[in-house]
Image (cartoon, rainbow, N blue to C red):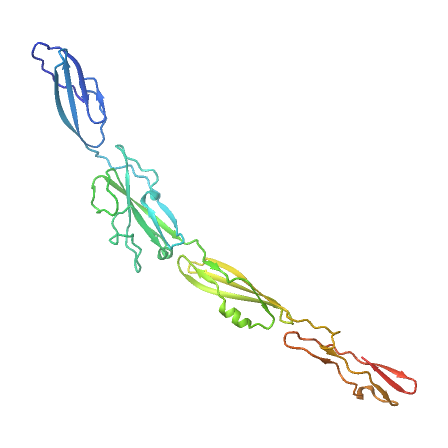
Amino acid sequence: MPAASVNYSGACPTAITYTTSNVFTALNTNGGILFFTTGVYKVVYTVTDHCGMTGRDSTYVTVYDASVPNLVCNPQQTINLPSPGFADIRATVFDAGSTDNCGHVYFKIKRMFNPSGYSCSNPGNPANHFDDLIRFCCQDVDSSSIRVILRVYDAYPGDGPVSDSLHRGHYVDCMIEAIVLDKIAPDITCPYNVTVSCGADLDSVLLTMGAFISDNCALLSIDTIIDNQLDACGSGEIRRTFIATDIHRQQSSCTQIITVLKTKTFNGLDPNQLKWPEHKIVYACRIDSDTINAGIPIINEDDLVPVFRHPKKMKNTILTGAVFALKF
């Protein structure tokens, strides 16, 4: 600041001290270098003589920032959608180190064009004004690129949406290409593994137990692969694999295991399950053994314990006196 002009009068014409001050700085000199930010400030000059008499006067200084901020932005920004299916990204994310020669910088952002065919506006900002954040949705994934405008101010614009013309001359814009991706596969939870007895209604089990599937955007298809590993007795495992595919070709899968247990086993030594025919002796000469009705084994079985039969040819033994003895 320049020095003030001082006129002395009275009995004490010699000045002892000077001060020059504003809200930021106080100097013990008549004028000098003071610190200012942008705005209007009062500067006070004070002079005191050796008699203790004080004189004071003031002036106003207006500091105007005539330069826009130094803008640095990312030309391309990738957005990965989280689990809710939309992302609210703050404007500062798109900045790459913007500055201003007089102080702080402030950020707002908006889409260059409203979405076509779907809605994806910020909460409370349906008119697509410059705002503190910008929303991206699942429908944006299908767009090759989305152009947004980052605006950097050197004057505080306030919170929330603002007019496009606010603080004209105190901002600079940058166009950025936003690429929106969906990298989250569907969330799938299989029904719990179960154990049933042989003979259970497996169709009912399969129909009443399904997988729980959700996705942050939308599902395209749900496929089921059934691997039947039951043996001839109907026991073993059934492995049911669920495969979920979303509209952006992300996949998840899980497998349910259904265990089928045997309820009975076949015991050939138990006469209640297997009864052999009685021994038979035929008194004859030159008889064809195939014509002899010697009986067959009687097997008591049910659907739960199937028994496999392997017939073997009878063994003929000729006894003394042309007597046949047939053995199985």
